[in-house]
Length: 186
Picture 1 (cartoon, rainbow, N blue to C red):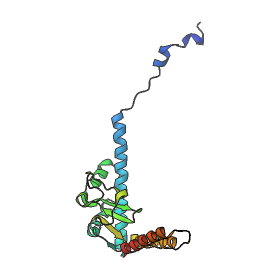
Picture 2: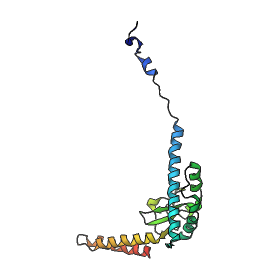
Picture 3: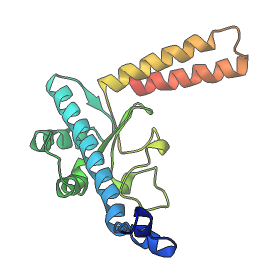
């Protein structure tokens, strides 16, 4: 009777026994893009829902794109909480009237319209570059919440400017920046 050692394979045949199937690469690549589309659509829906609720409570909105933001927010109840599939996400992201992005770092909202965007002077893109927001852009809208945050930031800059540890040229720059933020808030 052969022992357990005689059933073992050695050499290249041993490795052929355990071959794992390779997942289709194209499907995996599309999967991450679909996931990103769904998350982007959910973020857009959340922004519009928040704006809709704020407007219903009497929060003000101003800026060159305020009217477009109000129209987009009016559509928020239609799709709030219902984005579960790639097709639903594509429908929202494909609707140019719903392209509203909150930019907390710049203290503004971008109601994106490619033809008016200052963040895309040469390159053609269907989404804003939120790291390139310009205060003079026609796509900007600000709520009262943004104005409050602008005033708080201006106050912090003014506090830094009066510090004795700050050199005069830097203090002047901080004071000018604070004044500009107050203008935006007004």
